Length: 170
Image (tube, rainbow, N blue to C red; front, side, top):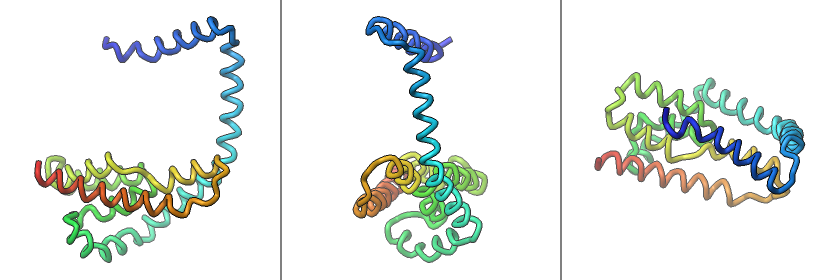
């Protein structure tokens, strides 16, 4: 067995020992944390459902493919393969949906192809921006986040360009 197999049990034991040392009731703290997490789930659930529905509609309606084809000239200028356009468009919305697209890329082009390597780099270096935004801003008092999403999307696009360039060089 590797050390990583023991890591979580060791952390739990250290946490209980620390709690005893600080004279905290570990069980009551755990129950309180579980109770407050339930409230967190209830307040953020509507935002998550809205994101999931929007992503599914975006994908099923064919809008992602249409938008990908419309943006393909821009992607070509930036050095991004057109085959990755649907992945690039879905990734800011959903991590799981983009992994399904990535799996389709693997099946179509092979896992060792440039397209697959660039797709892996894109999937690994970008984030589900709208999902994270929905979860984060549903739990904070910040209501004016007008610059947050555009900056995140521009950063995501720059990461995609860099990922494709690096995969092309390597």
